[in-house]
Image 1 (tube, rainbow, N blue to C red):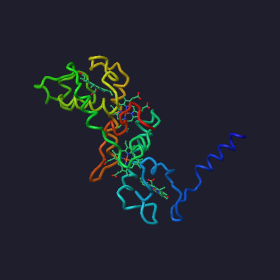
Image 2 (image 1 turned 45 degrees about the vertical axis):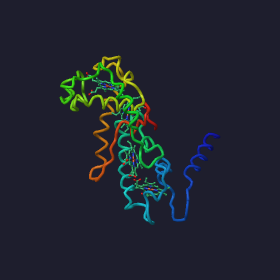
Image 3 (image 1 turned 90 degrees about the vertical axis):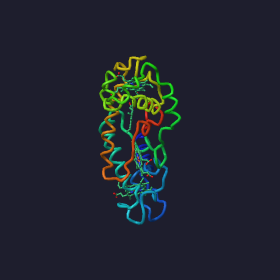
Image 4 (image 1 turned 45 degrees about the horizontal axis):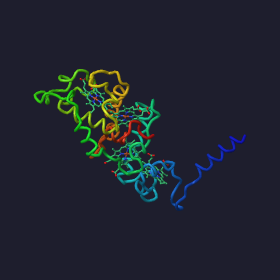
Length: 214
Ligand code: HEC
Ligand code: HEC
Ligand code: HEC
Ligand code: HEC
């Protein structure tokens, strides 16, 4: 009985109107859009019509919301999904990978993973042994790609590879990364027709950690 009373109280508290002025309706986003992006209602809304807005942030947010829900119910449902905050972390635009973080990983690129300069322009699949998602990039770009992934997740090669047996699939996070690559086919679909669609990287969600914020 006590539990039920507390639950009802909690529900009443969270759904109570957040009136900032008489013209401001109750926030249908439950504070999520404002908190996760660190903005006010006026960032996306103008005038008295709350259902539409000519502000660019309104259109982008509607698309972002569809994407966030789509990924959360699809490819990322096994992980409990994501929110605006996963990428935005309280900011209007998500942070991007710091160049210095990328550089310090790239500087340590091991000799055992190097390609003969004569093969650098060949498709990676012709030079490396076991590529299922990166086969079409140039062999010479593997260093940048692996360094980006490593820096984006704030980890090291050993998280996904055993020593220099790079072709082996014995590490679970190597296989998880291939699943992650599916996201990059899915995300752009929500931004078709935009003059400058957002660009996504591993860092957009991971923000330098192995397990993104949810
Ligand atoms: C980051 C952009 C953004 C922010 C910030 C934002 N909204 Fe919205 N709002 C939208 C979008 C997009 C919609 C259209 C419906 C949807 O996609 O959720 C919407 C819809 C609405 C609606 C109409 C809901 C309906 O269909 O009846 C109301 C009312 C509203 N917002 C109020 C607010 C209030 C109040 C705040 C501030 C506390 C706020 N919004 C902050 C983007 C935003
Ligand atoms: C998978 C990561 C990701 C998620 C989740 C995400 N966003 Fe974004 N968002 C981005 C990226 C990337 C940009 C482009 C930023 C840039 O242009 O530098 C962006 C841009 C935006 C912008 C435009 C910013 C500007 O000033 O140009 C708005 C508004 C926005 N997002 C709202 C939302 C809302 C609301 C949600 C949750 C419903 C959300 N986003 C979820 C990655 C994400
Ligand atoms: C987050 C996981 C992850 C991290 C960290 C990572 N890799 Fe990889 N690596 C992969 C995946 C996944 C593949 C296979 C890609 C494919 O299937 O197309 C791969 C493939 C490779 C290959 C090609 C192997 C072959 O012959 O098929 C090399 C070489 C490689 N990685 C080197 C590195 C080095 C060096 C580092 C550290 C700087 C590193 N990787 C960090 C996930 C990772
Ligand atoms: C749209 C957001 C998003 C993008 C983009 C993304 N990830 Fe993830 N990733 C997640 C989420 C959410 C999880 C958490 C899974 C969990 O909680 O088990 C995750 C988990 C992982 C894990 C397992 C880590 C763990 O928790 O054990 C690896 C490895 C990984 N991602 C690699 C990558 C790589 C590599 C890229 C870029 C090629 C990438 N991710 C891009 C959202 C993303």
